[in-house]
Length: 171
Image 1 (cartoon, rainbow, N blue to C red):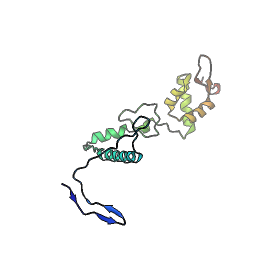
Image 2 (image 1 turned 90 degrees about the vertical axis):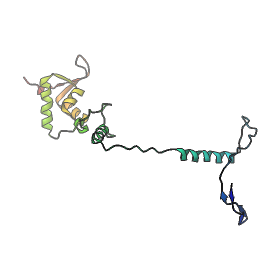
Image 3 (image 1 turned 60 degrees about the vertical axis):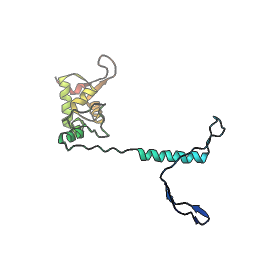
Image 4 (image 1 turned 135 degrees about the vertical axis):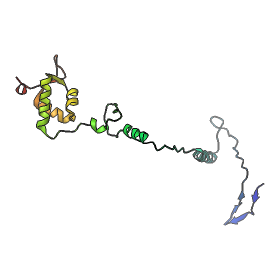
């Protein structure tokens, strides 16, 4: 049954207080329109608000319990890469730190110059990517050094490679 309380009047408005034990929703009859179905705008507004509220109430939040497993924590930390990591889609293997693949500018210019010249003793011409892998220097800095020490071949058999300038060649 339904528990009803007397009707009260507040400033000209009638109110009913009570507890609803069963509710019945109704929908107004469709009136003629473009498709033969046009509902009252106010009803549509109330109905869509109710649907949103019901959907929000029905959504379940799922909490996942993660066991206190030290190995799982370590593996997940190693797999996460910083947002600024630029690695052409290659992820480092587990155990390899991201800092190992970073290129840090060598402060001692003479040291890196000697390294570049020693590479050209080993092999007469190099592609830029290979030089960068060997020296682990940032792109802009390495290009600056190569422009001082080397000649870039834009055409011919050695196209796209760097060779050391004549004045730096060893006998």
